[in-house]
Image 1 (cartoon, rainbow, N blue to C red):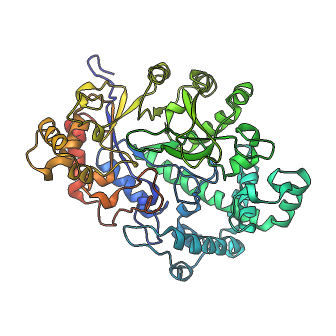
Image 2 (image 1 turned 30 degrees about the vertical axis):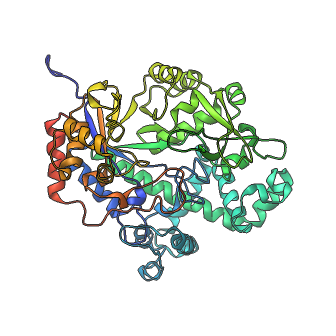
Image 3 (image 1 turned 60 degrees about the horizontal axis):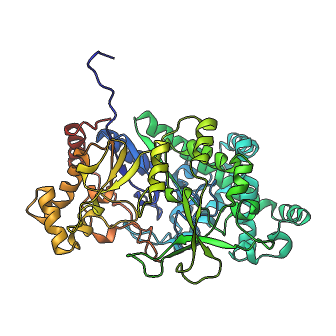
Length: 506
């Protein structure tokens, strides 16, 4: 390195969930469109592609409520790759009704069609011209010690199907409590179904590894997301009840959520089981290290959702209809991250430190050294000075115009209160509302923050209809998809120009 040459640390990237990619089969997947998007990011001078959790989704379709923290979502398996390998025919694929539109996902229709198609692929393995190679790889995948979660997950899904999709706590007592003889009989009875769900994980893993390798070869790193909690109705909770605050019948004692605040009079009742942190500490956080290690096989950088919960977490008595009654309890604090650093080494982490932050949370983030998050949409309260205004940033943070939980920049600006909008115009140096989105992007890029991540909807200047998720609501979330012709050469050049001007080129 030349004497006066400085190491480049300023970077930029794009937030776009896998499901939001364009594709011909109802939902974004690890298909050609994903590879094309990687090429677009590379040409646009980007360094990062941030996605949402990749786990199989359950009721409500949220990637933050998954049937497994280790498994992948079968919806993301590329159908055309299965056609290429002779596992499906083009006619079979086109014969399915995946529902939805070019810009919207229909999860109910997808659920009814996708698994039938994937089962056809599983049944056709012997007919494939590469059957020998597939079988060899599949067996190796099942025997890999890193995949020791696979058997429990596949049986969980098979049993879920056998029980009409009902939650595991409604299953027969011997299976619910995982009696040894009952599990043995279930494995024998549902042998084919267990193998099918294992096969889907093999396909998911193979295709994702190929896509991630391609992204890395093009200079693009993947930022993934790990929710702090797992779903109650998941293989994780069913197979490892000792990790969670459950009673002798494996019923939750207390559950997760957030207390009432200015945004919600009754708080947020998430319903996830809480951890027995004393037990995790006794085991040296073995399960957590395994979970985090899995994340670093999938991603290059991990964003830890709801980081505050590691300092203090809110506990709501199970059965309460709202989050109004509950109490704050101490989490593991720095101890978990100290063990993580000693066991796994220094890893790239983003701490989701949004919301009301106590001194102890701020202290924990600072002690870990992890960069926190700054959201520009939170900055323009005309009544007070905000930590989210760019002139208040430090280098060690990640700036976003908004996240998957926020309004699109266009929709946000259009609905701003009059005084806040006036302040935003003054701060951003604009006179017309039509210039607001790119002025926000420019403010993020010009900030001292080491990394700027912009949701794809903001680069496309899309309105409120393109919002990914509205917290504390059911229905209509996680459905937006990008149009197939959205990625123009003009947009690519403009993104590249911003990255160059503000010193963020990859």
